[in-house]
Length: 116
Length: 111
Image (cartoon, rainbow over all chains, first blue to last red; front, side, top):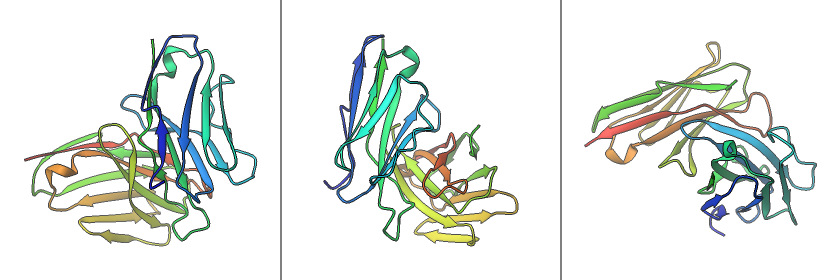
C-alpha cells in the first residue's frame, strides 16, 4: 500500500478482554515498530521486527503483551486481559534500513484503545 | 527516563512569527530526527540531522545540533495556522534502529 495501515482505528473493550491490533507496513519495508502513546505523553517503544531476525521485545510492559509478524509483512499486537492503564494510542511504523533513508520511520494513523 | 526532552511543552504564537523548539538528550547519538503529529495520531518525519552536522534546512524548517551540549533546536519560520501540531524530537541513543521520543512541544499558531 501507499502508507502504513492500522486497524481498527478505534477499539473500545471491557477490562479483562483480549484485543488484537493490526499493522500493515509499507510494501518492501523490512523493519516494523510498535509504539504506545498515552494521553499527552511521548512515544513509548514496545517492540521491533527486522526481517527474519529475532524481534527486540525489550519495551513490552508485561507478559500480557505480545506481537508477531507473519511472512515479514503484517504484524499483530495482542494485549491479553486488558487493564484500564492499557488505554492509549498504539502506533505502528515501518522503515527500510537498506535504503538511503533507513533511519526514517513512516507511521500509521494508530489505534486508539479504550479499556472501560 | 526520556532520552529526548522538548522545551517548551507548549508554545502559542501569531501567524507569520517564527517558532523555536528545543530538544535536549542524554547519551551519544548517531542522528536526531524531528517529527510532527497532528491531532494525536500518526507522526510525520520532518528532518534528520546527523551527529557530524551542525545545521540543516528544509523549506521553512531549520534544525541545529550541538553535540557538546547534547541539544537541538527546530526553527519554523513565517509560521502558518496549518503548522499547529505537536513536534517531537527522536534520538537513536547509539542504537542502529531504536528511536526514543520526547514528550513533544505543542505548537499553536493563531491566525
